[in-house]
Image 1 (tube, helix red, strand yellow):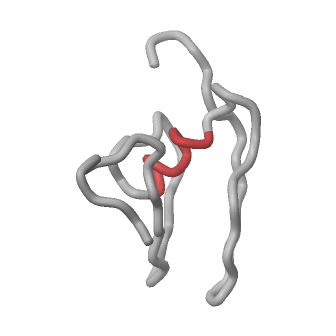
Image 2 (cartoon, helix red, strand yellow; image 1 turned 180 degrees about the vertical axis):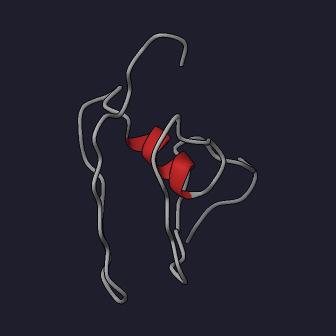
Length: 70
């Protein structure tokens, strides 16, 4: 993201069976963090360890607008 610092000093642990939600202001880095966890974006530094965890994510913009979630 060029020279813009989006996320800094994140230390997050989620244990098996836990469900979390990310909330925050627009531009706070929620989607960026999820994209890093999904390996769609590489972090500039640090380590991402998912072990056997699965990250579920529903994007804000529809991937296929002809289909809906019921």
